[in-house]
Image (spheres, rainbow, N blue to C red):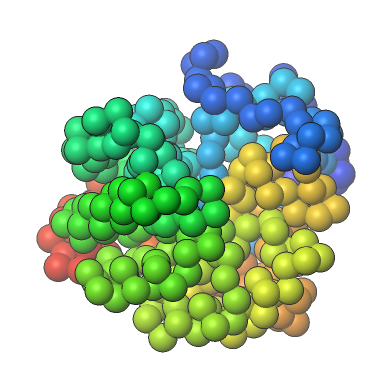
Length: 338
């Protein structure tokens, strides 16, 4: 357990945290206005009470600057440690952000990286004639020892439409699936309004060991399919939203050994903090909500989610990870067990 050195409900002081990263590390910045045009509250949330049992953030985007001042990676992870979140998977969506994730994971041992071309980026990359070369670079980046997953990849029929664009998404998705299986890596899926097509693709070409539905957006039916197939489902802060009964129903039917938790930071901050900048240190709010909804002990639930995360991605510690990576390379499934 990490000692709590800050009073409960105290907003993080970015100047007090240890900044271990470069000053120019944020290649992207989140808009100050929400999608409906309203200005967001840009103040980072107060630190929640620390978890009694350590846990991890399955999916975050630390390259995106948000908030009044922004947080560097060292600040993010120092704050996370104060509430017993010991690590995070920071996730790419194109070549540039994937390079950044690999840099960050090599810079801070509390981070691991995921690399991919996001499904909504794939048609734009293809239109520029660069899809093949960018996919080749993703495959190369994925071989870094600090890369824990291929992702986020998948299908998105909400923001992308048209037969040609969807065909490019499909091509890119299947290429990423092949990389994950070839390299023995888990895969994080972005699935928006494309549940049936994603499931059909995974069944047709064969899902990688360690398939994860990031920011699970389905219902109990999709959750039962995932449970039958042995696919992980990762829940973000939107599981707390009033209009997300489908997510809570899905959580109820999943076996606990297939449940993960994430922020998808800086987005999807849980209620009552919705709209404010999200960060790995906010995970305790979401995991406590999930445990309470299920009517289970928070410590036992957190321990299970943490075990799922480490079993899927391997250790964060650099020395332990080097040994684990060697085992992974020698494993036919790619994911060491036992």
